[in-house]
Each structure stands twice: as structure tokens, then as C-alpha cells.
Image (tube, rainbow, N blue to C red; front, side):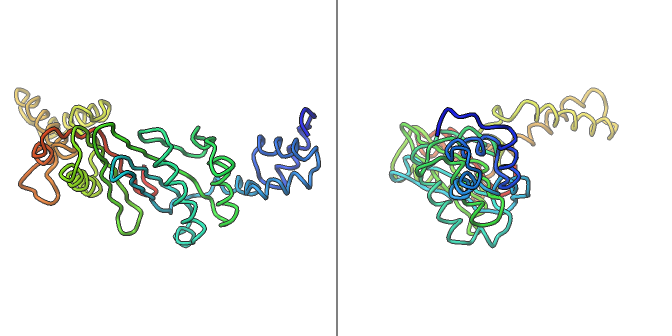
Length: 288
């Protein structure tokens, strides 16, 4: 039934019974024509009932899903969190993770999206309902808080995507390269994805590192130099040296390549003519 007025009292009562959100309760009551029992059944059928009550619990476990499409021309990555490793190993959880990963690889916006509990991506139509309802249904079926924490999708117009998924499926990376395709490009992207997983860079190049983070490191370096009693006339030079060292350790192109520390990553990229690293994503379960 549509167009009927649903009272705040009825919404509150249904919330108390099911633990579902205000909007979900109102919609269910409208669909049920105001019938409280039927509205509760509708919520349970959608997996929404009681899932809301779990949302505040810690979802610090989970897995990363990655899917490559078109021989590396596009890829999607998903972090689906839950409360325990036990649930993360169930067929129910894996089926949802695999389905969402394929959907993201094919249909999500390009880039990295922090989804969280209220993200707009949750309202995306999916599997006959929405991403949000599918996640809530998983929470209801498993009895744990389940959260789609973040997603990534890379699809270069003229390039490739490399990926790496650690054996425990809790660390995953994507690296997007433009300007080249073919076996050499794919091999480079694969090596860089492995490197990113291990070295955890902050940005592709030193100039891309967040300005606030650089300012913080500068303040720390200045305090250190002052505490060490260095002469005033050389303090600025020492501070700049510390900042350069910080950038070389955290900027991807300046890091020593993990498989060959006689070269920096920038040299590895330069060895493939035309290659340019556009961006990367690194997900570790439970880590910001």
C-alpha cells in the first residue's frame, strides 16, 4: 500500500522489534499496509532485521577480493569486513565477497571509494535489491557485523592493471599503468603490485605525498635538529635531508625495489618505454 501515513510510534515499535533503521522500518510498514507482523517478515526476508544492531560492533576481520578483467585491462578490489575469521571462511561470506568483487570490477566508479556504513555506493542497485541490502542480509545470516569497507576499480584507456593478493587474503593491491600494453606492461604491473603490498608507499611520487604529512615531518625534523644542538647555519640543510629521506622511503618511484635493491622503482618503470604509473591501491583488512 502506498500513500498511507505511518506513525512515528509504529516505526519506533518496529525498530525495537527488529533493530532495523528508521527508513527501512517506514518502507516495510508502507509495503505491509501498516501490518506490524508482516513488516517484520519483510525486513527479515531482506536480511535487514537485527543487522542494524550489529553495525556498532567491531568488524576487524574479513578478506580482500580481487578480480581482473580483459587480461588486465581492468580490475576491481573489495574489502569486506566481519567480526571473526570463522565467518570470513564460510561459503556464505565467500559467495557475497566474490559476487561483490565481480560487480565492482565491472560496474563501480573508477578510483578508490571508502564505502563505510553510510557510503553512497551502498545504494547502488545490485542482485535485485541494493548493495546495502545484500550486505545487511549477509550480516543477518552470519550473525555478525558485516561491512563493505572500501572498493577500488581501475580501468585505464591505454594501459594495464597489475594485482597482488597475499596468501591470507588480507592484503591486496592494484597498480594502474598507462602508456603501454602487452606482456612487458603486465609483468611490470605485477611486480609493482607485489612491491606495493610489501613496501606500503604513501604516493606514486614525492610531490604527491600529502602536504599536511610533509609539514608534520618537517616540524618533527626541526624539533629533532634543535634538540641535537646543531648549529643554526646548517639546521635547514639537515631538515631538508631528512625530508628527502622520508620521501624516498615512502614515495613509490623512489623506493628501492623489493626484488632488486640495486634499483629504485622509477628505474624499473623507465625500463619499459612509455610506461607511466598512474595510481595504486593497497588494502589491508582492518587498517586505514
